[in-house]
Image 1 (cartoon, rainbow, N blue to C red):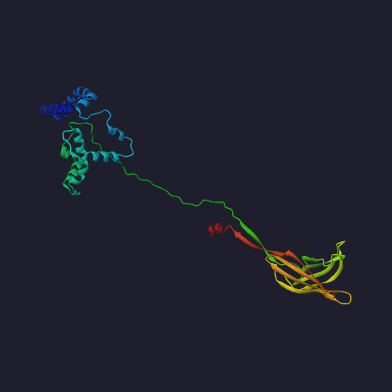
Image 2 (tube, one colour):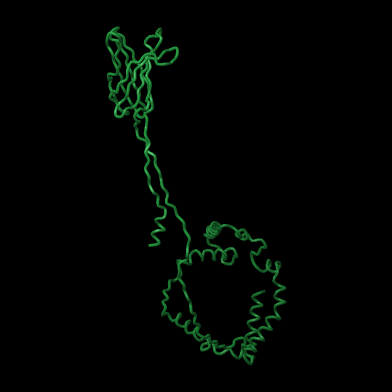
Amino acid sequence: MIHRIVTALLIAVSSLSVQAQSLLDAFNQGAALGRSGNSAARSQINGDTLQSGVPGYTADPPQTSYFGSPGIAAPAAAAANACTGPGDSGDPTAQACNAVNFSQTNPTRRPMFSITRSDPLLLGAKTITADPQAIAGSIAGTYSGCTVQTTTTPDRFETALCHQYRTMETLSCDKVLIVTPMQTPGCSDGQFLTRVTADPCPSCVDYLAFDFSCGSDSYLMHAFTIAKSSGQVYMELGSQYVPGTLNTQIPKTPGPSQVDGYLCYQTHYSQSCSGANCSIGAWFSNPCQRTSYFGTSTFAMPTTVTFTDTWDNQCAALEARTQ
């Protein structure tokens, strides 16, 4: 039905174009004829007419499922596989397969063309676009929508100024004095170190005590006994500077001794240090009675503290900017 209407329109336009006095008259007559047939043609375009006139027409074709799908690669491959066999060219399904097969085989059959910039097609197109009126003629008599306008834009000049300057800033910085304490082993003259005690006679009224203190370059060893009842000095055995310094290993060294008709005793001491901890051992012997006793005591190594001063100049960067 649509084919018949189009054919009729073509015949009508052909006949009218012969009788038209101008291109504008022919256009107006053809437009009027086309509008007069719109109502009749529109009434024939509906579902019932298409179903009876178009082979294979359906209101719900399966291809509607392609809409919104992530891809059509799988349906396309299925359609190509379904059209591998030959069919009747008059059958609508076979015609669809002919189109599918053509799309698969045509890329390998199409001739390859090499079109350069000097090809007559491109040169002719440039000639047409450069001056359409020279090819198609003037349309001033048939269309009045185009007008010729000449616009002149004057030259524009602009003056731009650029200012470069440094702003005034108020900045502050600090110079920090860093005081670092350093501990070194050592003690001052007369500083008490430790006491070593021994009780060689549990039934006696006193027991032995040895006090060690720092000297200028040695130890002062003070030997005496302490009364068990009062804790006071019961008998002085003497004092003596003995060789020795902190943080050293000292073997058994003689201390205060007295062997005469009144007293009979001998003392010795030793020192052993491991890291910051030291231990002093003390011996008391009575050569007249051939008895000997030993005691030991551990003490933390005394230290002296010295300080080093370091300035952290946080203003160096700002001072460099002022140079």
